[in-house]
Image 1 (tube, rainbow over the protein chains, first blue to last red):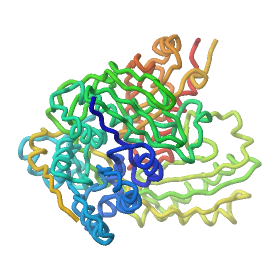
Image 2: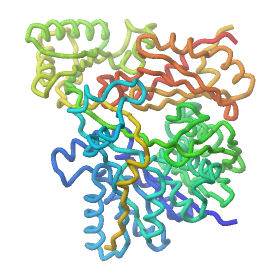
Image 3: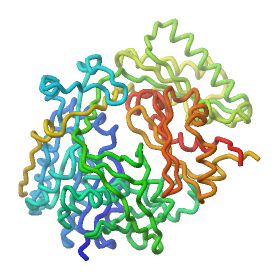
Image 4: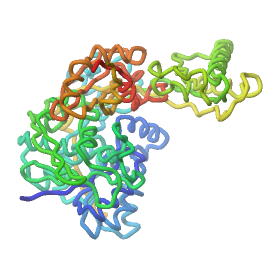
Length: 454
Length: 103
C-alpha cells in the first residue's frame, strides 16, 4: 500500500530546527511541514510590519531552510511552511534571493488571500457581521483599532502549489494541521469528500504541529522519565492510503513517542473532541485509537469526519493598550512581606504621580506569579526569596514607562536586602484577539497560488 | 479518603483567545470513571475561582481516558493582551492537579 512520510517541523516562531535535521537524515521523510504561527505570533509580526512594510513574516525560516537544504536536497525532501505570516510575498522574495545567492534552483510556491483586514468593509457590505464568535459582541467597538485579520485557510491551496511543482510552499495563515494534510492528499490522492480519511490526516497533522510536545516535551506526567530532552526528536508520521498512520521519531533522538505523549498532544488546544472543526473536515477524535506497536511507535486509526464547514474562522488583532512592567527581588527573612511592603509603596506613588493605568496586576514570582490564588501559602512566611512584579495597562508607551521609573529608588529607600533590581523593562504594545467567522466562498474567492523558480 | 489529582493523573493546557483548555488524563479505566464522577465542570469552575471569569465546559473522551475542560474568560482577555506572567495559561493544568477528590 502506498504511503508518505512527513516530519514535524517547528512548533512556533523561535523553535529549534536541529531535530528536523535528524528527521531528514535518519527519518527517511519526504516532506517537512513546519508551523511558525501560534495565535500570538501574528501580533509579533504585525509589530515588525508596522516598523518595516517589507517584514511581517517569521524571519527564522530562511536561515532554517538554508541550514537544512544541504541535507534535504540530495534526498528530495520538500517543505511546507506557514512562515509567510502576514507577508508571504516578501518571505518568498527573501528566500528566492538567498537561493540564487547559493546557486540553488528550486520552485517556491506561495499562497495568498488569507489576509482579510483590507476586505472588512466589503465583507460587512456583503452582510457578514464579523461579530466576536464567542461573545457575539459587535466589531464596531474595536474596528478602528484593528491591525491584522487572517482567515484560516485549508489544505487546498497548499495542494495546488505542490501540484504545480513547488519544492517549498510558503503560506500565511492556514489551519496548522492543513500543512500536514496537504502532502498526504498530494501523494495519496485522497478525495475532498473522503471525510474519514481527511479526519485521519488532520489528526496526524495535529499530532505533529507542535514539535516536541508530541515526543515528551512539556509532558505533564512523569517528566523525569523522558530521556535526553537535550536531543529530543520531533515527531514523524507515516500515513497510508487507507488513512492509517504510525507516529514515530528519528532513531537515536531523545524524548519518547508513546500513548501518553501522543494523547497529551491529541487533545492540546482542542475544545470539543467530537467536533474539531477545521477548514477541510469536522473531525471526531472520540472514535480513534492510539496503539503502541513498538518502542517509540504508535498506530493512529479510526478518526472519523463530517463535512467541512461553510464558514472559515478569522482571527483579527486590535491594539489594546501598552504594558509597563517592573520587577525587584527580596531576600529572606520576611521576603514576601518585604515585597508586599514595596508593592504598597509603589501603589501609593502611582497615585501621587497620577499614573493612568486601566488595569494593574501585582504578582510575587517565587510565590504566586504562576498559580495565582491557587498557590499554596504554607511556607509563605519563610521563603528564601520573592520578587515583586507589577504590570500596568496604559494608553501609551509614555504613560506605561512611568511605572518602571518608580522602582530603582526602592534600592536605597525601601525594605532591605534587594536582589536582581533589573527593574525597568521596555513597555510593550498589547493586542486583543478577535475571532470571527465568514462564509468560506467569500474568502476563498481571493485565494491565489503562484509558483516561481529561483 | 481524599487524594490530589497530581497523584492520579497527568494534564496539559492550551490557549485560544481568552479560553484555556485543560486535558486531564487517567492512567486506567477505574480512575477515568472516578474523574467522570468527581471532577465535574462545576467543581473545576469553583477550583479556579479568582482566576477565570466565565463558565467551564467539560467533554468526555473515553477512548484516550481523558476529560477536557474549556475555561472561558481564563486568560485576562487572551495571551497577547494579558498582564499576567503566565499569559498563555500553560500552568493552569498543573493548578488543576492541585484539586483533591474523594477516592
